[in-house]
Length: 210
Image (cartoon, rainbow, N blue to C red):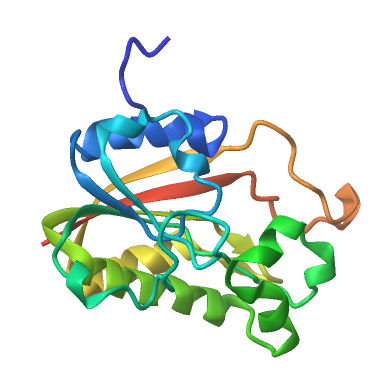
């Protein structure tokens, strides 16, 4: 038992760890923008009345607002105390291998067919989202991003890339949380063919706008 302490890592799901991050970094009654709401999984164990929550997703069937997270309303400049960013990603072109849930956000099928996928495209999603998050945050506002490293014939250290982005944009790194999967991830190769450790963890990174 951790006796109520918040630890840097946890075995579980997004909605298991996210309340701990909120507990440390977002005071109650804060104005919070979830830029990429999706199905609202992060918030399933967070009481709705604790925050003034703006649920944004470009998919008209999700959330309450439907802006592209890279182009939010001008009137939101300097408005939010905290922003959550978890952009959709498509590292490979073979969308047939992906779950249907990955298709829905940001036209992943169309992006794949037109060649918009891969490390550079994913990194640009994060960078553009972080730029827009900085614009809509108040001074000392909190940005929380979800990301995961990848193996694309070589190691792709996404969390390091996004920490560097944050530093260049004038954010200060506040914390890093590691979420370990409950179940064994899908294995693409036989054990004797494996060249790198299979990723079974992801990150929540916490930054402060200076």
